Length: 115
Image (tube, rainbow, N blue to C red):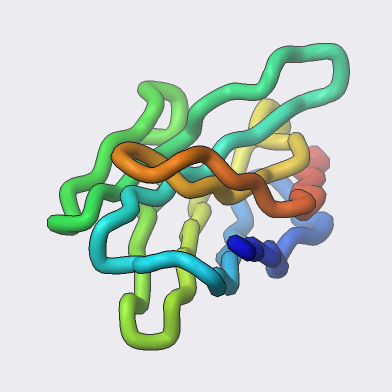
């Protein structure tokens, strides 16, 4: 049974920072890629960032240079460090397993950025 549990969300003013964590269990972290998605109110879920088993990362254009994805493979924790947050970053953030593994989702953590 794969389990993903996000934490670290909250409310912050524009320009601030948050660091999200995703504790994972039940899968082989050495072979699965991982990803962060977000879903803003009234919008479709959006891929934010990925990291593969070799540590190669990708980012959607709107967060490049502001967000950093990383993982602690020993502790099986995925992170998303978010800096210079913008109001448009407000969303529920989800971690998920990624290629080549089947996709499993966490329950999400709310990030709210205010002016």
